[in-house]
Image 1: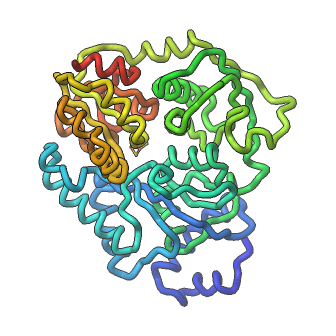
Image 2: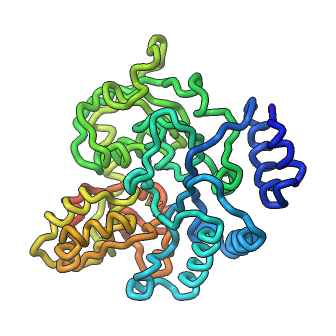
Amino acid sequence: MYLTKEEEKILDGEYGEIKEKMFRILVVIGDIYGADRMIPVSSCQISGVSYKSIGEYGLEFLESISEKGARVVVPSYLNPAGVDLKLWKQLGYPENFARKQMRIVRAFRKMGIYPTLTCTPYLIGNIPRFGEHLAWAESSAVSFANSVIGARTNREGAISALASSICGVTPNYGLHLEENRKPDVIVNINTELNEISDFGLLGYYLGRVLKNRIPYLRGIKFATTDHLKALGAAMAATGSIALYHVEDLTPEARNFKLENLEKFSVDEEELKEEKERFSGEDLDAVMIGCPHASLNEIKEISALVKGKKLRKPLWIFTSRFVKKLSVDTGLSRIIEKAGGKIISDTCMVVSPIEEMGFKVVGVNSGKAANYLPNLCGCRVVFGSLKELIEMII
Ligand code: F3S
């Protein structure tokens, strides 16, 4: 890979041990994937924040590099942590876990990383422009940035995103290159999609079937930001799809020739079968906000619970920013009056919910449906917001 004189100096240790090590990681990745050079990135989204995911070793590593002077050089944002930093006691999170989590967030802050603690940076003002190069690690945000915005990022790991935030560059390969962004399968969708859960279910199914291919989706007549965030998150979870195109909807959809592409179709029956795998009614809780809920989702929930009393916990995960808006608009008061809670900084997957007694959880997210059984040992009941709320009223 071609390196500039300045980059050679980094490798020679002229800018300190941490920067050298981090840059070396990027060079190794670039060599493995055949990158020709490094390119500047305009922002980084850093995963591996929850103590549940990174454990003692990760905590020690982050504290050690922050002490040794690691500092970011581009705007960098944090994925959700393992607890709500303000409400952890009230919600019953284990104290030892919460204290370790706070040390992790402190270490990241010391490096200059914004403690946004959300997987939806694009809902709180960090909206890249079309064509901008990024180093984002959160798979649902990667999918959104690539597909809905037309920005360019590979699906980074926790360490490679951190390395990019400290060095300001990423190796030029994969989805940074135009030729790797073309669709390789056409998916005809022969069923109506209305709810966020419909898009989540479709994503769950497509990820399982298509693995890491780039689909060109036809037949989606209308989709909101919330629909697309649910679709992409689920495809990235059950498969490793980091980019998709939707005919007449996403910005790069018309850039590519579609001749000779394999075709594949999805109809109502397939999605119905997929949903039936997650049926049942005996819930311990309903958990919404994977990816983190938007204000519109919170509004929809508040309309469903207004004036009602919930029999089981309803936890809605979102960013601090959106939570504040929900307080200012009075939506959170309606939800709390019904017995629900709006929780920020964390989510159902990276929180230690298995230690908190939750065994069967209702979700409307394809990504959560994939991860809760694997990472939290929970059984999942899948439904639309309305169906789930009805189960706990
Ligand atoms: Fe976000 Fe947690 Fe889901 S990080 S995408 S809410 S698993």
